[in-house]
Image (cartoon, helix red, strand yellow):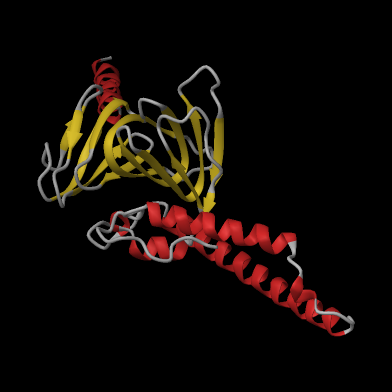
Amino acid sequence: MKTILSLLIAFMVVSVEAKEALVKITLGKTSAPAMTALKPGGRFTTSSKSRSEVSLDNGLIRTGSNTSILLQSRDMISLEKGLTLVASKPSFFRRRIQVQTPSHQLSVKGTAQIYYSPGNAIRVVVIEGSMTISLNSLSREKVTLKAGQVLLINPTDAELPEPLEIDLNRLVASAGLLADQFQPLPTQDLISDAGRHQAEQMAEFDDNSADDEGEDDADESDEDFEMDEFDDPSDIDARNEELLHAAAADAIDDLDGDGDPDDGLFNP
């Protein structure tokens, strides 16, 4: 009887401990050292040029410089400011990690990077898997992003914008929160698969575009007049989309969190 009781107590202790977040890695100055348990309601912050990794019950988060998070529960945090990378644990029945800001709810089923500047901007990138973003308003409007998609949000807007596409392989190669100072993520294979899939899709798109251009050139040679004098509406739409991406890229200082301005991350 005593043995059974001891086992039950041990099981309860392990269960309680599993509900606590744990600061696993600190690089630079942080509010708590490595191997510190964070209980619900606990705040964790990083200073300038600092990074960290915190394990959750269902995955992990990494924080960049000048970041503040508040642990709400074993799988939910409030991002008060700064940059985080969120990776939910891969499994057959994959659970989500919830991230809150004052204006939005973010539900991550995969690996995503989230930046929040209070009153200025929210920038989210899905690296693999998916993420659903909803407004904390009566409308409860929501958008689901897939790997390779980015959302640039003004926290005061009443609607969510359209997502943009980003070069995943370039992002992964330059992202500070995916750097060698950390161990490979548990989702690393899924990230590689997502980057490879996107690259294959882009190559197929480029091949199809080249074939279409070749057919268009052949058709033009049979015409008795110059088609170049006329604007193709699809070309205008493509140009507008290119300008939109360029403007978005210019508006971002450091989407990948590597400390340098971004260059060439967006797919036109």
